[in-house]
Image 1: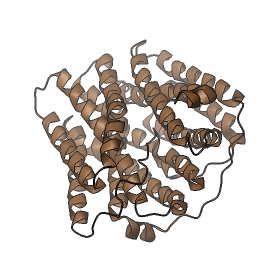
Image 2: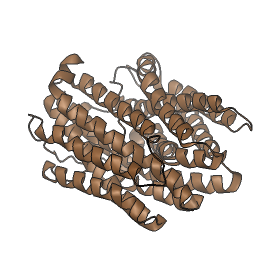
Image 3: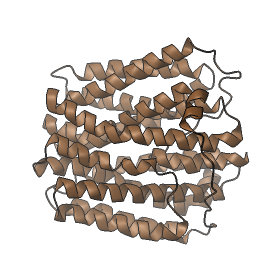
Image 4: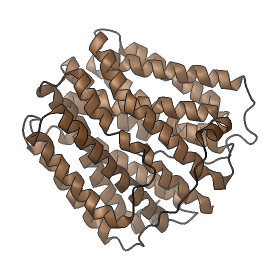
Length: 399
């Protein structure tokens, strides 16, 4: 790990600054949208617009790297100038496209630097700095009032600074190899649970990170408490990622997916109990984040159990498309439910998705046996953007 950090620190530092900027704008829009008088539905449309570009598998060459960064920085300072939910939705589409390109470029760059022996360590370090960046972004929400311009200027500056270490890193420019994706029909035949699970977890991810601030706003929480809740989602994912991955290498992954889904559904049901103290919601956030991030990785690893290594990149592209497709509808459905039943609709929607995932995992266990050598495929570490997983998986083709 230390060797990877010592050779890739410019890239890792740049990624962390990017995630600080990205994390604060996601939370800030949910808060500012409420202050601007947007309805829950309008805010949900704004938040879902970011995830539409996560279906894009390739977004160009490294020569557009700096252009995408400049576009992100500019969009961040346009938000407070045009507080209209339609304008914000369009801006979120643009910024989502740009971040997707940045993630893919950065991860391809990292895979270029890493060797087969250090690639796992490199991706682990990459995931850790992403989590740290997003956690730090929630603290920045408290440095100024969300009604002003300062909280929009800060992420714009951080994103601009992020490209200094990235562009000056003494590493070769990444290349984008073309891969032929599997058809969705073929992919579903290979792993029905993987396909269905990625669609459902896309909804969970986008609801979690797109509507958490909206939930806090509806609950009447202070900005400080909202940032703590969102930060807890990421801390949970950071802490429980590897313990769950270690367990998954020693048992039928479907049983673990089912068990974690049941646990998540129970935790979400508890969160809907009226009168819970804020400390209880922090525990809920820790568990939700700690379950959702590993479940995403478990679904990738389970699908890889049925694949030859040369097919993993093509399969991953299709699964990421499904995850992105589910992510588009997550905030929309969550916003609709919250508009009908109140803030508890946030947890109710996620509970429903996990019940569906647990039920389908149980069904699939009755249809075929666990793959031979279960647990032998590498446990894949997810990144902050499911789209970026394409580049990470492609790095395994040479193994």
